[in-house]
Amino acid sequence: MLTPEQIAFYHENGYVVVPSLFTAEEAAVYRAESHALIERLAAVRNVDAAWGSAQTVTAKKTRLLHCHDVQFYSAAFTRLLVDERFAGAAASIVGPNVQLHHTKMFIKPSETGAPFPMHQDAPYFPHDNHSMIAAIIHFDDAPLEKGCLRVVPGSHKLGMIEHESEGNFHLSAEAYPVDKALPLPAKAGDVVFFSYLTIHGSGVNESSEARTTLLVQMRDPADPPTIQTHDSLGQGMMISGIDPTCRIKIK
Image (cartoon, rainbow, N blue to C red):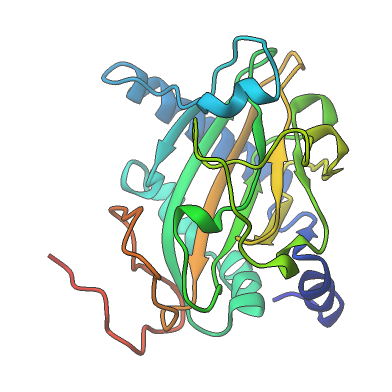
């Protein structure tokens, strides 16, 4: 559970950093699990997911290793999603019922880890009541030089902003430069929760170590998608509470 002060900070700024939600030792286990998973996947398919729009941030050739729906590849991540510390924190923001939309594990390789131009997540999967939140769970330290998350505080109050769509949805690099946004350096075990309306992005990992994170997108199950898009294999799993709508149909 979040404190009243953390909840108030979230509603005012559109994000909140929860330090040491997991221990450094737990984060190290998940980091090893993430890198082992990428090695297994790389043997059978392409795991590079660098955005085409990354070139609006840097001319450098960059890479980004990723996996959707990690909980279907390792039970460790399933346990993580329903860990009461994580589920309770999410419920403090969304409400008692928290439903999974999707997960993405990202590894920004050392020196070439791809940036994310500033953007909102909302254009990818808009919902009527904008209950969608994201959580970034840090499995290792994410200082500034690793291309840590950057946000524009209070930008969730602007509503959905029109995005450029070439090379993935992103905002104008001139109007919203990554290096002018507020950096949120983190330690292993820290979790950042933010609204899908909060403008955010990240820089290049210029360090000698990889940056490893898990992104979890969640919503109130009573908040219907404005358009049916960005479906994922794990969509509909309950992280906390119940689904009072019974809208998800298991095939």
